[in-house]
Length: 219
Image 1 (spheres, rainbow, N blue to C red):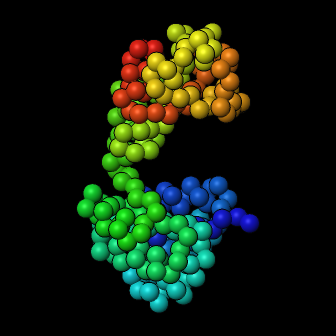
Image 2: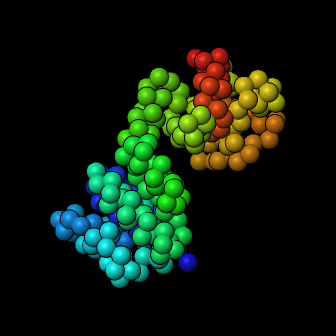
Image 3: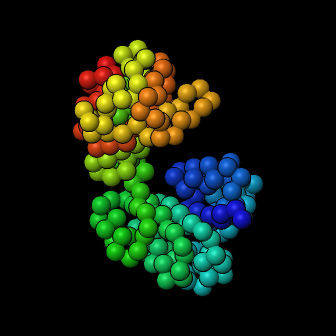
């Protein structure tokens, strides 16, 4: 069965998630207190509903406990975000991701049981800054304050060398977990796999080690 998602709050962040899920062909319910926003997503989401999710009876009437994953993307109203998360948790929703406004907001969300907390503006800022600093970096995903997954385009310096030749794990403390090569994805590449120019290396490790690798090898 296809997973079912609910997105609460259809501002810029929630709206973009709703669109992305719908484009993947997934079942998604879009919820907002603003009727105009809901109307905007009525042709995008599977269901679009006007509702105040700080009202437990409203949340129950939506059958939201049956959804696999609920994303709380409420904008500037921290109280509404916290109360909605608390209601979802008490109703037994399987997985809850919540947008946080600041570190204090995140602490409260984690204490009441949010499974995943995101800071979209801050995280996106880090990704953009990282890609500006390094011409070789295509994408950057923060795993924690100190660890990331990065997509790096291989240049001539790496071409022709195998992973065992480069010994990246021993020298830099990072791992190449996959290689994208044209339409092919090599997951957990073997030690003898030779890197080609324009291969996309998917690297995981501590930020300081990834940066060290970029400076030594990729520049």
